Figure 1: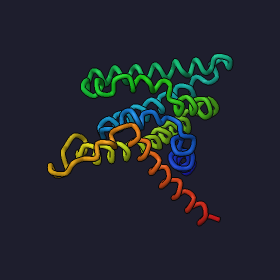
Figure 2: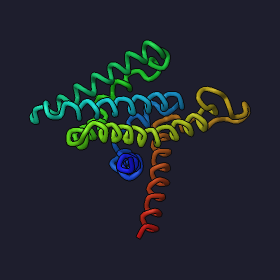
Figure 3: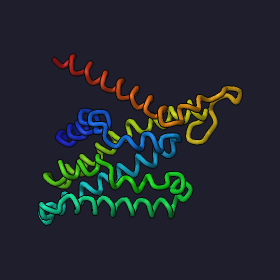
Length: 202
């Protein structure tokens, strides 16, 4: 149990693919104008990352090395299509709002990278935990950015107005530069916390 706890902490915090390798940041610009969008996109990445890692780990002995990347992409695409179809069936309005961005998870470097670097070399349960950790690490940045962009740019949270009607929102935060600004601030804060912990550990 301690091994899996350590692995989860490692993937969420110490090897977070967004604020260490700057991977998968397109969605930080595209879907984080609303907290609901960020929540659904985070859920999609968590579920697809876990399902992909488990499947790749189960099939690793059967996947020929020279076509492993194509096989991994097919596996990712399969789970993306399943998630997208479920979203259309049960939450059609959100499916329309997110548009092509759910489909673009197929090209998300985080999921492909972890299936290649970890799931292809490890057993099923560690691969499941690794997928969960990377998905949660992704959500750890996407959700706060979504929260603050919607709050500051529209004066609402998850579509519910919370700012006074006479207060003009900073609508510029809903534009792409606003997403970059908040992303930079959050990465700066998180990296600062990491450096502080590293110095304390010395």
